[in-house]
Length: 510
Ligand SMILES: *[C@@H]1O[C@H](CO)[C@@H](O)[C@H](O)[C@H]1NC(C)=O
Ligand SMILES: *[C@@H]1O[C@H](CO)[C@@H](O)[C@H](O)[C@H]1NC(C)=O
Ligand SMILES: *[C@@H]1O[C@H](CO)[C@@H](O)[C@H](O)[C@H]1NC(C)=O
Ligand SMILES: *[C@@H]1O[C@H](CO)[C@@H](O)[C@H](O)[C@H]1NC(C)=O
Ligand SMILES: *[C@@H]1O[C@H](CO)[C@@H](O)[C@H](O)[C@H]1NC(C)=O
Ligand SMILES: *[C@@H]1O[C@H](CO)[C@@H](O)[C@H](O)[C@H]1NC(C)=O
Ligand SMILES: *[C@@H]1O[C@H](CO)[C@@H](O)[C@H](O)[C@H]1NC(C)=O
Image 1: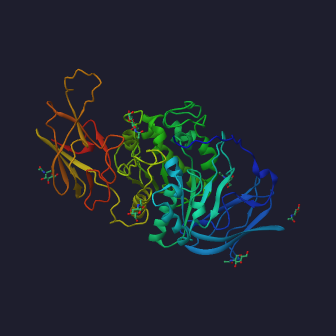
Image 2 (image 1 turned 120 degrees about the horizontal axis):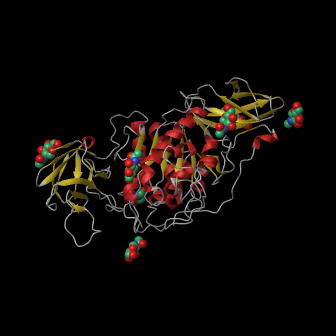
Image 3 (image 1 turned 45 degrees about the horizontal axis):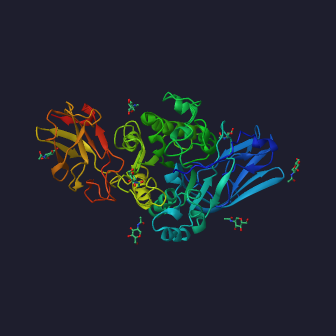
């Protein structure tokens, strides 16, 4: 169901060996380079010992460097947002020029098919594609779908070279061209920030987090690169034979460029693969990307660069009953919200209320990507761009008061509530006598009443005491934009949670 594509293995080729003078594959006309205060890193290939000078619209703006082992690399001076500029790299008797280069914020977009989902596939696609011409200072780039058993120095292919957006580039074949979430996030940021935004797409449908993770990151979670994938599963048939193959081919080559941050939409594939490790593998991949981009850019990309992600939406007929709820929870390192102490400088778009049962691309691929991108952009504005009073997180409980009739679930903000009999569930300390040994220990806890920032849920269906409480713990918890608990303005849904054992972190007060 998820996009999978046959592909050819590319083994590392020392492309520098030809000694040809050029930029790395992802430097091109119309690109966006990271603006000040960071310095943009430029690099490329050339004949050994040649000296390279970089000119920014005629001015020399970086130290002269020499080609070593076929590679040259420079950090420009910090350039404030704007442009266009021409950037010329000169060596001996040759020069190469990149034209129409802008300076702004560069965001990397990664993940699986819901990130690969193109603007052509979204609701109101023609309206969205018509917007392309209104945002000539949002620039797009996309890496080709390639895997490798070793870490590549440069991308081995480019699907969309740096371009001024057009309807044609944003469209293209389903799942094969420019990401709708990436594009919409970029244009929403542009509308707020008013300066250029560069979008670097590197995503592939059907992929589990392990293929995007370095062996170093996986090792911290007890996984090794030699782990082989199942031949197929109900969600996808895997064209990847081992872990790390897309880290090698589609992320590692990008490490030298200076980035502002990354956004990510992935996790569906992990509902069936190393599910119980996702609370380690996902945060570990973020840590590892941050460390690697920081080091390889010579400290220009922040060591804690912002990382935004989409919490899984919905899926009908999942083969594993706990898959979607567990991945949603693990995406937050089991805190339920971000940023949190384990996942600092992150932001999350909750999407479980954006389900789309009749999506022609399967229910796992909801077509409303604009709300996804909008919620992500709120997170970026609050966490990254200093709009400290902007609401970007849905309500999350910070106190549970239990008596013999109900639990008073108190939220960290004002809430807007609608009645529901089963969105909350409780686990009774003594399992109810039942003829069916497989019956769930969880029973519905109907909403009884609510106030400005609390909800009372009934415990009458537990004859014993209550041992746990969970919220929205199903594949498909609510209808479109109709979850029972939202922020007071009705915009941001309360994220799911499961507190199976009361603990001090949950703030339980008896
Ligand atoms: C960049 O170079 C092109 C020719 O290659 C020229 O037409 C253009 O005016 C230059 N732009 C800047 C900003 O110097
Ligand atoms: C530049 O000079 C080198 C020798 O120094 C020569 O091999 C090469 O062909 C020259 N390239 C161009 C484009 O003239
Ligand atoms: C980054 O730049 C260094 C040179 O400073 C080079 O050795 C390396 O191959 C480049 N690419 C990556 C992916 O590290
Ligand atoms: C991750 O979740 C699994 C089960 O879902 C749990 O056993 C494990 O302790 C959790 N690990 C971390 C690092 O939180
Ligand atoms: C889900 O499964 C049920 C029962 O097997 C089936 O009737 C229904 O059509 C399926 N729904 C979708 C959207 O595939
Ligand atoms: C699609 O367009 C309709 C009519 O303009 C609008 O009401 C709706 O919010 C749009 N939906 C999305 C997801 O863009
Ligand atoms: C629920 O708890 C909140 C404080 O956490 C309190 O203000 C409210 O009065 C309580 N509601 C009931 C009905 O106990």
